Length: 222
Image (cartoon, rainbow, N blue to C red; front, side):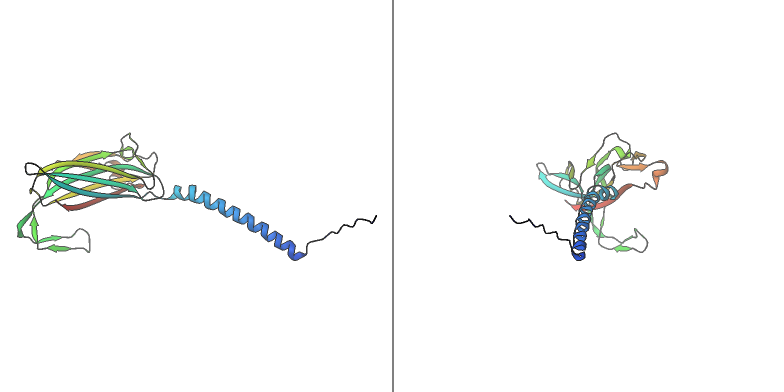
């Protein structure tokens, strides 16, 4: 019976470096995958500001007795990638008519911007409806969280005499922030025309870092 032979092979320096590079590549890919997962799921959302988009729609339909039913819907959609906490929403609805006479109105809302309107003048807006609601960031105990992609609807409606107004204007104020424990001091302001508004008090009257607030005005034909 012949003697059993064993062949021992030793990797060449090139093969040794190739195996080492493969191991390093595998470890690097695993580390990168873990980093991307942790960054995308935890680190990045924690450092991003929420972004809530507000869209207002106004619809109307005739009612018996020469009346008009008006419905206002405010959609608040979180278009960001992190949870948002709603702070407050104020909506004032005004009705106006266009007169039969041309006006001459100069409007300069900001430095560098000026307009002149020589078309039909508009009557003084009349308050039709005022909506005021605040949540935890502005002092109320209620917590209102909006997750990414979620849409919150705030509808309200009322009726007016038909052909009483040509347009309705929405004067809106809206605040949101990151979920947390910070509270900004506010009070409900009762304005001279009967509408409600938000009044910031104390140090937060002119500056409120961390609280995103937007004021918008839109007009809709009815």
